[in-house]
Amino acid sequence: MVDTSKELFRTIGTICAADRRYRPEAYLFTLAALHFTVAALPQPRHVTGRELVTGIRQYALDQFGPMSRAVFEHWGLRATEDFGRIVFALVEHRVLSKTEQDSLEDFRGVYEFDEAFSPSSVAYTLADDLPDLPPHPGTTTG
Image (cartoon, rainbow, N blue to C red; front, side):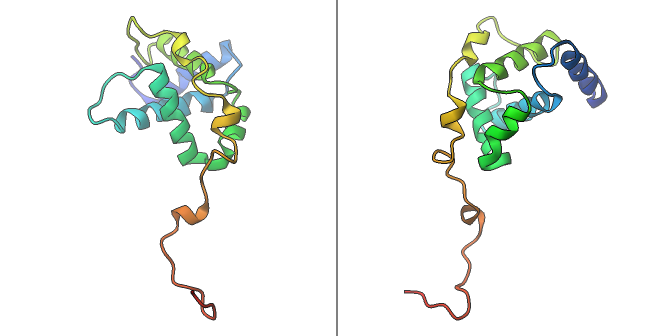
């Protein structure tokens, strides 16, 4: 297993040099989203590919809001299966581990980016994150 940040960055660099489909940020984001997903569980445990990409969607929306799809496209990510390819590359390089039941198929077609990150499905507004504010002076409430 990779023990230090320096080793992790070196490993991701090696993976990206061999397979240029995805930017290094996609690998780092996937690892952060894995941590986010596992931390949301009542007890830490292995997560399935379907569970991970569900967590990835939520984490992306938390981090990037309505820009999630654009960020993913910039990183070379077009479908949930791309996250599976990243995970299995990280498994191959001993950054992550898998069970005998895990397969790339687990990541295939979990959701479509067009739907999952469309403006109509992204219920994110700045107002949702703001505390209740008093009315602006000079306005009436009614």
